[in-house]
Length: 196
Image (cartoon, rainbow, N blue to C red; front, side, top):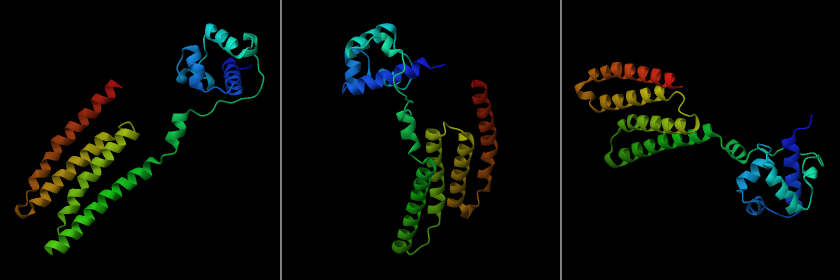
């Protein structure tokens, strides 16, 4: 059985391109947006009967012509999906994290040259920045999957930074804050599951 959406989509594309019209131009003649024309041409939806009648008048064909097969056609991939597939998210994240590490190394070398000291805390300060970068990119590209774990790692990295900054007084007790933090993150993860 022939899919009516594909047949009509094929005919709209052929008639529009043969007439030298853009999707926007056809949309303007029909009082529809170019996005609507694009959906019809991708066979995602069908125009209503009045619109098909108007198209027949614009292109000088009968409605019967619009409902019958005249050539083979398959819909183009959705432009947004095509654009998304061009970006390698893991590579972008790797570049961002390497950028954070490079900046930390730059500061380490700068302090080494200017102050003639090895300021190792720079790397401990870069850790929460790297984890925060990962959190933001994970939220954007992975819809926040595993964000609870990343937030936990971020809090731990902040506590580690504070510990290293105050190591002379050995404030190991600061890591006790991870116990209530872990409990809070656990219960937050349960709240989110109930909503879904």
